[in-house]
Image (cartoon, rainbow, N blue to C red; front, top):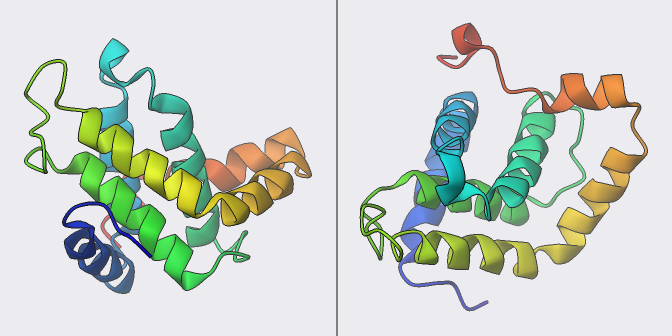
Length: 143
């Protein structure tokens, strides 16, 4: 599998996030950064899909994803949060291009896993899906 530039570093970070129970904190941080106005408009739908998947996995509601795919998704979210990645986010106009590329790579590489999650989502009642994909409460993010 051809990983994006320096992506293996983020895979290790993602494994630590999962092992240390820090996924709720990561999801909250991604949500805060993703609300960044028009800069993230192109990313918003993809971010919501990946956040929803991670939240559903964290709650134990959706486990039909391989551990390799989950770690890769979490690594992409970690990469998105890092301000000093391959192209620093503060470089207006180009700072998010690498974030887009990594997210696109994850979406393309794990298309089958994400399609299965989308199908599962569509089979859920709206109120169930809202509960399952809700971001963890702030007091639980320190768990």
